[in-house]
Image (cartoon, rainbow, N blue to C red; front, side):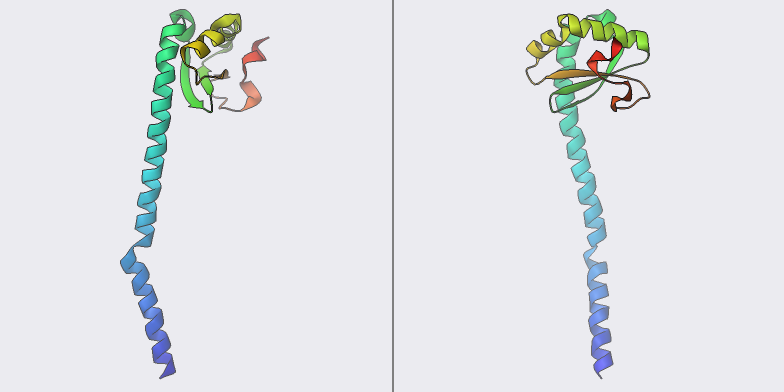
Length: 129
């Protein structure tokens, strides 16, 4: 008789897990959290994009794509080294200060080459000499 009671408890435990669909709820929650995080980042980046389009000259800004804005750091991606050089020179010549004045959340602009990601291997304002 004791085995039957133990089997009943195990069966109820399994039924509870299946009926509660805890895994589906957890997955849905994860997707909601990711969606909210993406929306927050999009809102933050859109404000910086407005300042970028106003402050940065088209000849300079047209060479870059804004990839992210996190903790005051704008990540601008360029396709080649000459574009990086042009953007870097503009930033050092007062462009970064003008961008900070246009959007007070901006602390720094990090320029990266396309395909190099966000690591320091091809990044940084001062990397172009």
